[in-house]
Image 1 (cartoon, one colour):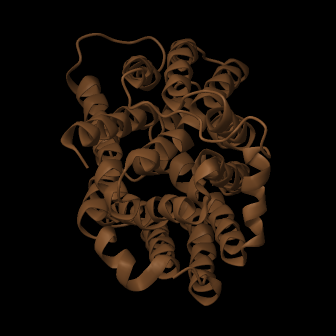
Image 2 (spheres, one colour):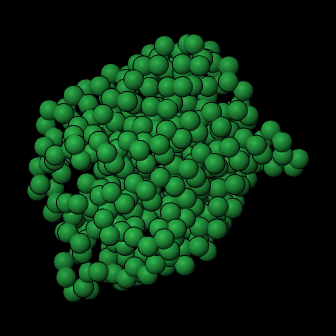
Length: 392
């Protein structure tokens, strides 16, 4: 792989995840706090991205597999998304925030799959090279979290609305413009062939792939306890709000280390199934530490397990999907995975929102039983993954 290609793909991953990383970990604190939304409303706003992952990726995969270069689609989606984020930053009602974030998510969701398919299209050795490119997405998440924390601590200008969404809009604009310089990635499917989305669905005939999607769905349902609950949970145990964005970057620091120095070496030796199970188990132990709730240093440190788990599970999953999918439908195959992932995350937002509201007394969340639920369910998923997954 040439340095020019490596730098281009790495910059793509970096910018892609600065956008999500600017608002994903911390927007819930803004919704539950200053905007006074309840947990269920917050969960619905976070559900906009999973819902979009259900609705839009297969359409986008169809477009880039048959009609439009991938880099053009990425540019258009991010530039339009910039406008949506700027509008969302000023919304202060549930309906206004839900509508604008819903439109934005329909634009952003397909780009998550397409940056992967573009990278896999150009990488000479995807099974190993992908980790070295994808690691910059984790680095981006860390740096944007620090940047937001620095803005809140030392910034001289106060932003009306969500500072996280404003920062995301700025990075979305840069990503949209940069996408026009990405390596040319033309459609690979002939216009008169079977629809790529239909061929991707045909992959479900592979038992290993079908089991893999089921496990991904269940895991996705439990991850929303992290995204919806963590920032408020940290406030409740005494972490200063201005320090939360930086504290939550511990996960991405470990994710970057895991992708660069751990997962590329363990995957060839233990295989896909055990690597996926290892990631699931790491999430279960993180929730166990959350459920204990003290000491504070243990809770904060446990977030590092989220980074290790993400590298083991999702980044390994992207490689697995690329390996088992035919070359002419890889955009649609990655999109199919995000549809299943989206179904899981959407179900998880509703599940987490209901559980959090149910276990809330006089405005206070009962965090121990809240986090015990995903802990137990993920341990069962890890056991099932080792037992039935045969994609080694």
